[in-house]
Image (tube, rainbow, N blue to C red):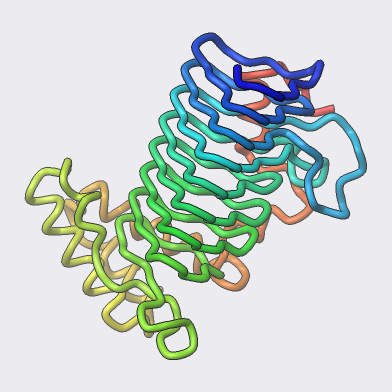
Length: 268
């Protein structure tokens, strides 16, 4: 532990986790093993949400994460499910922020100054380049990549490269192609099917729901393409292209799952 750290009385930190200088860990924060938390991080403080009324809520952080200097993450809110969670094997670079009621899964990479508003889910393997800002209640699909300085106001499908290349006003954020690195571990046939599906769906997003349903009717559809299509259907069914809008004022399923598993929460 470095100089001038402040650790609250309700904090639990696992073995092998190191803290740099001037780190603050407050609230009901649970941090797992072998994390590296660099100078100036502030974790588990009260969320910046006027709907928070001071009841006990949590921040859960898994194992083997790397948090760069001045990373911040807040506990959850009562209305959002009492929980903010960062999984395992993630990299959060300098100045990135995880707001209340967010769920960052495993093996994600948040670049410098990435800002997550409340109630967001970042699925496994997603990459957000520097200075990406994400609107609340948005889902970032698994193994997607978001280009630097892109404002994200709707769900980002899995396996795609999403960007506002050229600037927001000249080129609104959209799917620009495939996140090729995400396909590296797939069998060649599945990777090719996924490339064709992404090109078919997003070369022109008009009638997207029709094209998704057409793909789902094809026999022997590979699993990654099914995941992509199911994700798109959920997003299209949500308000403003955000599936998680349906959880406004409700406890999302992730909260019940992780709180019961980690802290024995009974829903009270």
